Image (cartoon, rainbow, N blue to C red):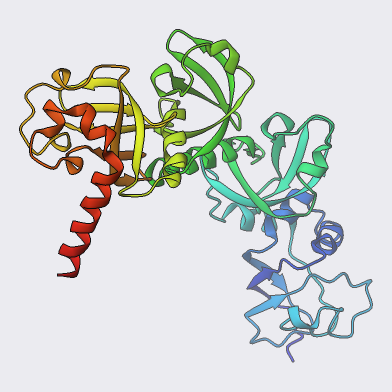
Length: 383
């Protein structure tokens, strides 16, 4: 065992263990070091000139648990599974300057916009102090944490519980960075909405106001908009203020802070589950376009494409249908993801063009015509 007191560089790993406070309590008295240096050391490996006493000379790299020589030590210090080598009482004789230089040599990636993990360990009237393994404790202002009325900050952010934070301000001269939880959560909301846009997943929003184009809404702190054309009830917009609506995101742009929803598409997507393919439905002609007829099916819209009107060429939809007409159609396709219902009247025809010159007769006998069509379809399928 080498006991000549020579000084050598030793790689010390300051372990993060339950009871980090032991290191905070005993390292500063030994070094005269600040608590911020202590926090910076935890969990890192530092090369420090160390006077070894009672340690074999070949122990150039050892995992060292910091021990004050005033503590009784029998080689375990109550943390057997976390100490790789403890031989007697360790005398730490390196200087504060050595320790500071070792800390300065570490690569702390604390750029603005970086996510970091840390533990809040202290709270004052301005905010939390958070251990993120840096040169100094990071600071989380209370304004950067969403705290509901009547709830204490410690309830929202318990001390000594590790979680993620977002760096929003670069280190100052003391190495302290400023953190945010609120902006990290907002960032996560944008990401979630982006996924909702791709997967067509509905979310709940609260209507907060109106304008000429539609209504403004709140989604967990984010401001969004529903155009009038994407509302189910487009009449009295003021009556919608304060209501919660199920909507689908149709435009998500975090860079431009633009968030557009559709109540109509969300309602459509949910209501589609009520229908079945080859179901006969009755609806009202809501609009006519060159490519087809939009049919209102008790609050949900289906499209009767011009090619699905008749087995004969249709030159003009206006010659067959008028806005407000009640018609009977058959559902031929359902697309819940896109909120679309495809309709057909041509499968009700007994001859090509019948829907064009005998519309009323076709609708009057629609049930029997559909049954006949399905029987023929079954025969073709079985054949």
